[in-house]
Amino acid sequence: MTTGLSVPKTWEDVTPEWMTAALDREIPGAVVDTVTVAMRDDGTNRRARLALTYSAGRGPETVFVKAVDPDHKALIKMTSGLLHEPRLFTSDVALPLEHPLVYAAPIDEADEDFLLVMEDLTARDADPRDATRPLSVEQAANGVRGLARLHGEFWGHRVARPGLEWLEPFVAWDGMQWAPLPAALERLGDDAPPSVQALGIEHLVEGIWKPFIATLTAPGAPQTLLHGDPHIGNTYLLPDGDVGFLDWQVARHGHFALDLGYFLQGALTTEDRRAAERDLLGEYRDALGLPPEELPSAEEIWLRYRASVAHGLMTWLATASAGELWQRPDIALALAQRYSAAYEDLQTAQALEVLSP
Image 1 (tube, rainbow, N blue to C red):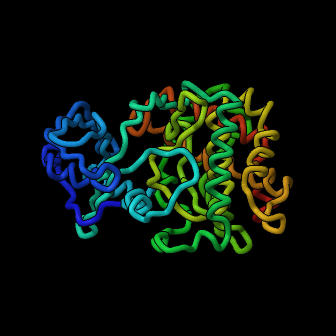
Image 2 (tube, rainbow, N blue to C red):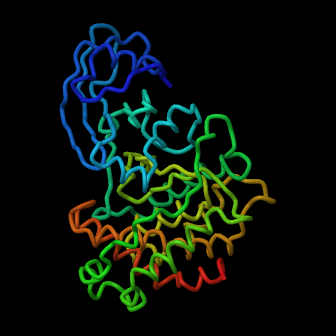
Image 3 (cartoon, rainbow, N blue to C red):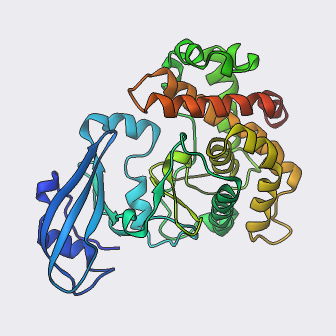
């Protein structure tokens, strides 16, 4: 990964000379002539599509760039990990699943700032998905197999490798107790089963979510590299049916169940999940590529998967309770519905009692 680059503070500071240096490792000899902001989308992070022309060589017509939004820096530090994504892509650690090509990810440690320059996935006809456009079972199987390859590659002692020394454990963060849960439950209405409607915010945080998060790094829990936030809104679908994973800000080490459950329970409709989840967990186990003595049993995967609903339920009830603050209400509501149904179907509270009696 390109090093020694400064971190531009505005899109206008991304000069042709800077972009030439950013592309140099992947596209040596390409000399950028002009950089134009073609699109910008500033939310929790600042994002833009930049159009490029060249005076020498050839390169992408557009790139996608991502940077810190100063107004959301404190929130990102608390819940996500401000510099985890650029650290991951400057580590030179290969990720064995579909993800965007990153050309450069310079970091300003002193100012807690970064700029990620990556491929514009529209050039590969990628289709970004969200909860209003769930995956098919076959597509979800491709995503599950990708996560299994990632987890198997970094399983156990394999996660402790050069380049990943900065990787932190996945632990609970503060602030979830302030979510106005009744607002989310009111929006869900009859779509929330009685077991979810009966939850208060204190029990949801202290009795459901935090106990599950504690299992991710408990003694005996195999550690691996986690994407950390693989809900369907951080995925894209390629024309060949493969599923890619975006937004690696929450990269952590912890138990595989967080990624597996959070992805699968939100990516499928409730009906498809109910019909296919057992088979999809088998696909995951088969794709881990681990020696027999390290391979988790089907029963262990099922128990951990049942417990993992706790994270999706907490995350998306909190998001749905906030109206339009963090996410489009229709997306937040759809995911809150799916994780609520899974909480009842999979008897998550009982699974947690087994894991953390």
